[in-house]
Length: 293
Image (cartoon, rainbow, N blue to C red; front, top):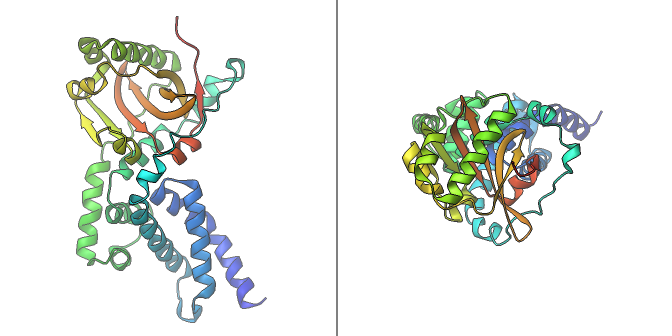
């Protein structure tokens, strides 16, 4: 077996790990695959004679690739927002299996990605590589151009932002639907008191960077503050299954503009994640629900 074939075989053994790292760094399967491909190109051009731990070397390289992509992404946000988003692919009602959809739910993952979007590239890299993939701060430091101590501080700041994400929703979809319907109705009517009754006192509203660029706030906490954000809104929102849980979608001129992943716990809304990034919208499992009675 030649050296190139040996490297290709070793790289394939690491591919799933590298893709997982890149997806959590970038929040996009397409960009994650691009990062994995770029990592392979760098490996194929590298002098591998002095690489003692190929897995660690590849993790470092894909970290650098993703870090550069995150920094470049910030300058592309306005270009991405020029298109409203993908056309909404809905399924006929008789093909929707709510129980099956619920089993596929990944609302915790979606909420985490929204929070990660609020971090700067260095914070995101430090948190993902250290907290999710056990990389040391000595390995992370040269990627972000900081000392190990500074890299530790980056991860610590990111950890404080992420803490508390991922409240488990009620398993039964019917109560979720009841709360979401009432929430959308109160929002449309501008009924502040009704909104307060539906929101947990510690509710948090988070928006990805695309939604922020479109006018949302990055993070809002507390029932009163979140209720104010939704007064008179939701005119174009419809209830939908968002990754298996009941949430809402906003459709403008026949195209998907925004999703609201809504976490309902004990009859109260505890989290709302607003997602407007066109590529992430394409990756969600969505099904518009029929209007309530």
